[in-house]
Image 1 (tube, rainbow, N blue to C red):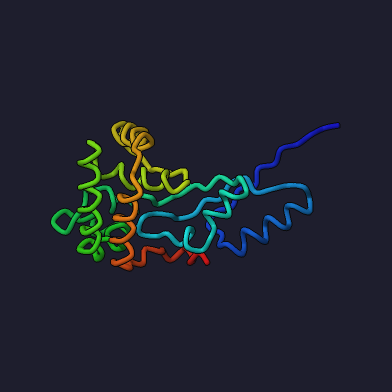
Image 2: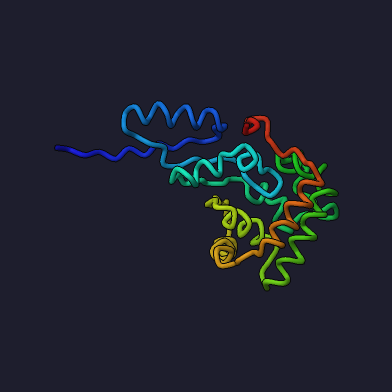
Length: 182
């Protein structure tokens, strides 16, 4: 008898679509192996909709993309040092930088207490929430920082502080090609 492994990977599906796909696959004795959604301190819709818990409960790996919001949460950019104005990132995040600076300030305090840089905090946060972050890197140092972020253990108070500031900001960072997770 031949056995076969089929990995079913879903990207940017909302909760009802994930459950529907799981039901369809179960009829064929298959299951979803991974879900990949936009998930960051500023966009927790996959958590709020129940997707993250569903994945944990069903042994589904949850990959988080946009954890650093295209660099806006890296600590590198602020109103005095915006993203390139002629880029999609700049057009999306530069108008939000006055508010993003508030959460970056909280991240900086947490980063300083752990002896790490600001960009490692959103990555550590995603890991603490049960996600596997997908990090876009262009430099060796960014790879090293991402690896170090896996060793950071954020306290419940630190996670709450980050999420409280993010909730107060109420920023919409859903891009035109994405949908709200519900």
